[in-house]
Length: 383
Ligand SMILES: Cc1ncc(COP(=O)(O)O)c(C=O)c1O
Image (tube, rainbow, N blue to C red; front, side, top):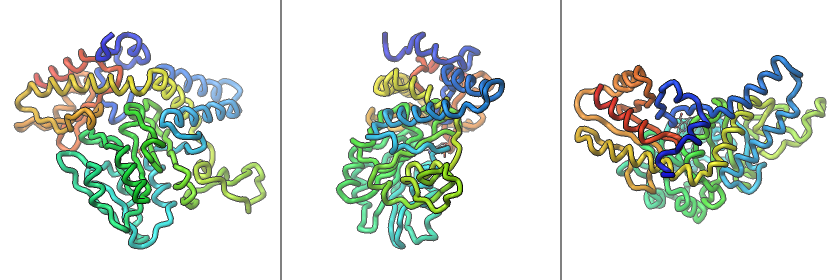
């Protein structure tokens, strides 16, 4: 079977396309797999019509989710994974918990999604300086990072894949640079995890934060934060609650030790139904294999790039070299066509893509087919 045509097996994991919807918007939000819906429905049924107090058994499933996330990102232990509500939660915990000194610098870049900027911008009150790299040809290379490091650089934060042009960073080399210079290496993973292999230990990542609703195909309001041991030891309690202490069920004992930072950030009751759903989605992705998913996505997005290149009035914004590519393909159409109007017109024809910053962004997951790309692009160019 050609990897470019996922075949009935992968298609059978989903249902949304059966109504004729061509969904090419996974960088925004993904459809849920049927198994995810089934597990969440079972939980909701029990809470609604069944034994109600079923949280013990469901908390076990939540722990399984943590283990599966650890396997997905190759963490050494599952207790390095904190369950969060979204990407911003995890990045805020790192930004706010770190023992900054006035004059410390953090390296960022100007093409980031603001979730990877605002938690650090809020540190101005502590005298932390944000240093922005300007991308060149839509890329931030390890060389650019190396040149920008100063004795004051304490941290670097970058998206594994950029939301706008889909540029995939060379995390391994960046991790080596950060490791050699004692700089904490923070990664916003939401546009990559589930679609791109991420190996936190091999890449020397200190914090990886991701929401679940994009490439992980999980419910909204689920996310996780991986912390390396050296960074976890540095972080101070930032967000706490009754579950943040060593023995939360000693309810009247207020003066307890904190749990380690990874678990004290889980301050109280978790989004149980959400993480039950996330567990099913991650199991599906792990079973298919992230390397295989990556190949499939590169193949189908490469096909889309080929088709776009046939159009003389289209300018592709996404980097084209394989090592920099992802499932995000962004382009501009010359003339006075308004991308927002084109995207709304496509929606009316049951084709979902996005417009961002004056560009059109399609984002392809492993189960999309070349036929869907053909139909979507033919429709777009005949609007
Ligand atoms: C790179 C990136 N980070 C973060 C987010 C979202 O952050 P959160 O999970 O906090 O909503 C997005 C998109 O919504 C994104 O593209």
